[in-house]
Length: 220
Image (cartoon, rainbow, N blue to C red; front, side):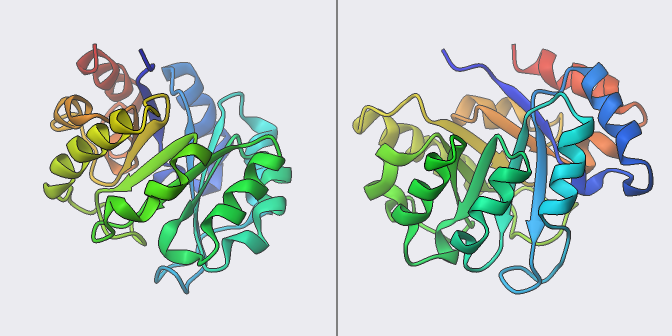
């Protein structure tokens, strides 16, 4: 039985005092810190690079779930792994050499993930299931925080669950990013999600620590 994990997205944190927010999340029992890396090309926004990931790693005891929303991710695998990523996820749409990039990640001793945009079919990753530790399903179009959950994601998760069972790779963790809130986290969990990325759903709550506690309670 895979452990259900809450992964607050630091895209919604206060970057003028990021260490304070990280300590708050540690005290709240967050399981992973989700870091969205955007390059202004693959998605229409720019966030941060390996230097910031390393700075966060230096002040965090929580494992880092680094999500590369960038073109040519293979060129940056080593830098992000060396910066402290515990999970490194690349987009299937961003590289024509997905197998090679996944092998680069695994060679660094980091857990390898692949992410699919809302329109991308599950068949696009069927040939690399044996190389994966995690699959990240986008429940919004990537690039901006605060978007609403795309309801078709539920059916996609159910089909992914069937695919993993068919290929006997049910150990792969399933991560969902986008629009996760207390109101829908149980439904997403029941459809087959293991890791729940939530940015505004946590950070915009009156009490983020209490929100994490309630999310964990809803997953029991």
